[in-house]
View (cartoon, rainbow, N blue to C red):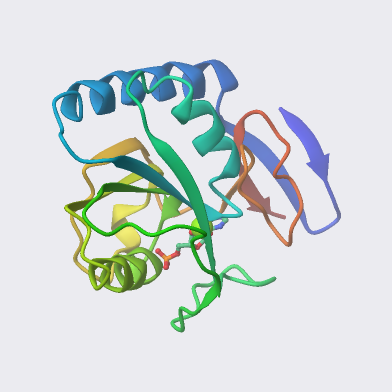
Amino acid sequence: MLHYYSMKYYIEKLISSNDINSKVNYLGKRITQDYYNISKKFILIGLLRGSFIFVSDLCRVINIPHEVDFMTVSSYGSNMFSSRDVKIIKDLDGNIYDKDVLIIEDIIDSGYTISKVYEMLLLRKPNSLSICTLLDKPSCREVNIFIKYIGFTISNEFVIGYGIDYNQNYRHLSYIGKVVVN
Ligand code: IMP
Ligand code: MG
């Protein structure tokens, strides 16, 4: 299905909004079970902007008390390739000391972004620190990281929608599409 296109590329649907909803429900249940008996404060940390829709859907299917905070780190900018330099552009509003922390990412590609964020947050001494990503591109991995929760594993394609952008556009799509270059 071609919804958006230009002379240079078009968007092809990869994951439907129904499939995303089922997966988010599934992840919410697993997270609820895994963190059910914790004695510390539980907090979700969304990496902006790509994870904003995922976090808002996921937090509503996690049925235990938790906080939500966001952080912005430098991203791809307008190109399709990963930049190696990860800087904090907007830090968390609150602290994570002694809390059980789950980082929520939209997509993990080379792994540089998430591993850098992981290292930075670990220095703040949370009680635990884990990673949840909606999409994983393991074939692109250059840094070894353990991801506790993965929504969908995809091949090496540039994807958009459900919060994820190409050149700041397409975040509003309710499905995940891939950018196909003409
Ligand atoms: P990494 O550092 O290479 O793992 O890149 C991760 C970040 O790059 C993600 O948080 C996304 O914001 C962005 N990114 C990676 N792959 C894609 C893609 O296919 N579409 C849009 N953004 C992407
Ligand atoms: Mg991101």
